[in-house]
Image 1 (cartoon, rainbow, N blue to C red):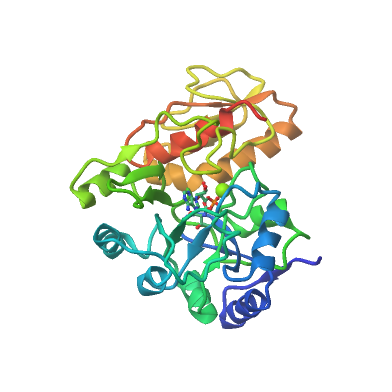
Image 2 (cartoon, rainbow, N blue to C red; image 1 turned 30 degrees about the horizontal axis):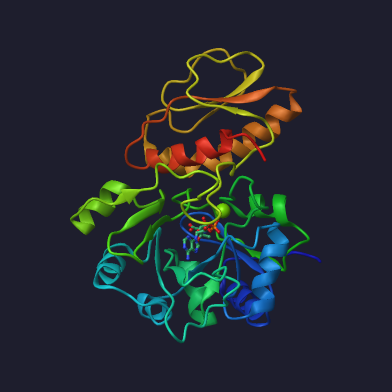
Length: 324
Ligand code: TXA
Ligand code: MG
């Protein structure tokens, strides 16, 4: 299959919508990462996403909508869900809620679960595309399963060229890490994945503590598919580095440690939002260039565990986890 690169203009958006309507696969930029989209109601198209990514069928997909009203037509929204949507949509927050009785989302996309994950992403182009489609669009991150997520169109092509119909080039993703996922299907909200909306923002909006899934492991993943090894570059990753060897690449945060000739600084000023936006591009760059130079691994400096640091650390811990 020849993967087309579509431009961020009315013609590119209409072509992308036409491919999705016809059951094809189109990658597009959101504020978080690039997603690989398909018509959520088309079983064959949804199956093709799993095939293109090599994704396990037990790992359900997030459905994307142009508006909160469109999202809440597919799930049973609670007052808390409506409040969070009002506060954070469009934006990097995904809500897990019971499927509505007449939910149009393929049961393959929700992996047979009684719940569905929904979100309204931010961004002019993705909003125009979702509006043109008029149906829910499922989209996992547009990378081969288990690898580093894409934050620009070239990253998508590096992993999926020839396996999908098109990429709509929406430029670099401003947030840079995936959406925060909150399970609202039981009495109390539970954070399933830290992301672009911080836990502090969520708890402030909810007016109550939000439980996290700190104790989850591979036997009982917090969200199906939240397995410990994920976001993995080719080179091994070593966390909390206090020094770096000459044969290692360095992912720095704040003042860079001396000793490596290959450095990507997430944020020299120690800004966690800048660090999130530069995270996946940095892992890709150090991996590719480190391989070329024959380096043995990527050392990562400490990143604080508050605010956006929680999502960054979550991705780094998975990147460093033993590979299956
Ligand atoms: O920012 C994002 O969320 C990006 C963009 C493209 O929207 N998408 C994304 O999708 O990160 P993906 O497939 O890489 O991650 C989706 C996560 C998985 O961990 C999956 O297990 C969880 O969402 N999920 C989906 N449906 C769920 C459900 N019904 N219950 C619990 N977790 C669910
Ligand atoms: Mg992903």
